[in-house]
Image 1 (tube, rainbow, N blue to C red):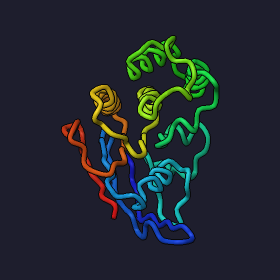
Image 2: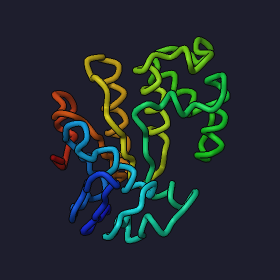
Image 3: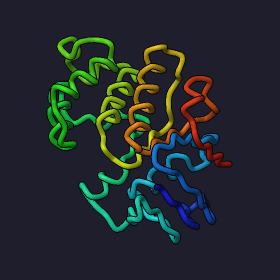
Image 4: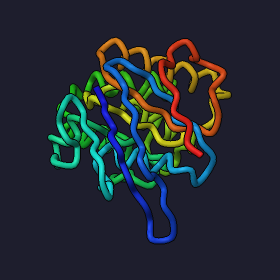
Length: 206
């Protein structure tokens, strides 16, 4: 279970959350809705321990996320950023895969299979991460989400779902994490027209 209790957070120029409280149960798929500047990204960073609240607590399975660091924190929560291509570390996709599989302690062959499924092409066809389009980069990042064992996965600013492939990738991710009892949170500008039957909770930010 994810439990957020009376979280307060502000930047020097303005307050974002005054007393935010909500919860999500194991297997929940939550949509966080709100316009630009409403605090969706900030919320994700708080939930994953990448920002600290001024007061209040974020706990996952009874453990306070801000008491953890490194692998212990990643075991509880992971943040998938909007512009994932800016986080690539290596000049080839294969080296990115090799690094990710070691960091996540997962099978490289399984990860390559998931990446190929998400990208709809063989890994041998993809060389430089810089050559990926924004949607391709995002689908590549989702393949990380498919294998991440974090109890909570926050996906920041889901892009356009007009592509049938992107819809299928997102649905597969949500179904697999839900079956495993993990919590998945997607930040979006508006309620999606697809995979609505998988959504169990909605949080609206102003």
